[in-house]
Length: 190
Image (cartoon, rainbow, N blue to C red; front, top):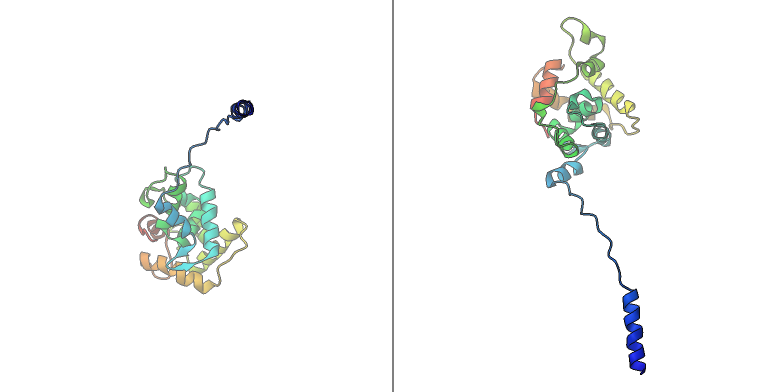
């Protein structure tokens, strides 16, 4: 009799303990290995890491807003100079699959170029970017995003970023608009 009562009690407790399994959401898609590698290397260019560059790149990615015009966003253009065009475009593609290759992206906004060189951009023949223009613009871009992180020194900026652009464009000590625009589109630097 005790066995029958125990079995009855066990059956009642099993019936009341039926667990309803909740529906699980499907696993989110993982980023591609290329995107993971690109994300891990934010702020790294020519084997040198710079936190101020990373700040510009993060701001660029946060402000894509579906635009394919990377070169119309100051933090994207500035970020490309310290991250490399190939790396920045790859990162942007990871965040927005509608962004094409660097050569498919619109030209450098002339307003950004004018922000770099000043009023002489609007004069007949314009004027090229000098190193001092680049430094002022780079630090100004950091200020505009409220960064509290800065490059370690001006020579680091010259050696690690500016000189690479000049070496690719072969324009001497200054950088005209068309050559800078070409660098953004065709240099494919990582």
